[in-house]
Image (cartoon, rainbow, N blue to C red):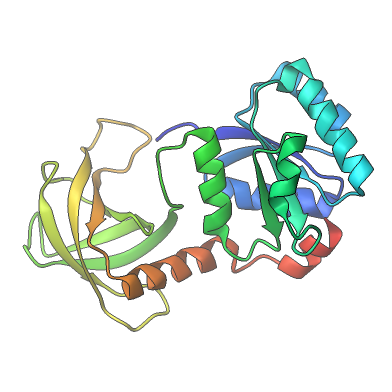
Length: 244
């Protein structure tokens, strides 16, 4: 499994820091937290980051000054910078791009997939959609390597099935399963894109990763909703965001 990419999070609020830290960890990034730009610059002298995520809910002059300080700091030079701003603060987010922000993401973060898409694009992360751990039984139409396997994670893009006898790459399988707390039977096709045998990688559970093929839009939306709920369903959005 790839190492998490480090993100420097600059946020004045402790509650906001905690919230963003939990979210980033769950979508497989490693947050390092700072309350001020000066603190962030010091941290960047001792560590290497892939991105800067900045809580930009500030008066215009303060935000512009913060952007200039981040841009002029040698330890942060060249890092993509993402501004987090409450919806409605600026009617034209693109007007902020000349300040040096690579992207502007709106709060509240009601669609975690949008944040993930910005992060993965700017950090050159190859995985296109966030995944979540799961434990559910999956039926294999081809009955190979056996009729029922256990899925251990899922995303809009695919699923990972636990097995000691993974099939060769490019093998096409037809799957049926129901998501936790959802009675609707999902039927999908997927091709094996990754096989991990027992003992080959100590940090990887033996099994095979499948990429979904021609996923119907309603099925994609159902999986997306489950992923969203799994990632942020237990977080107090209002409390965190009001304090950020």
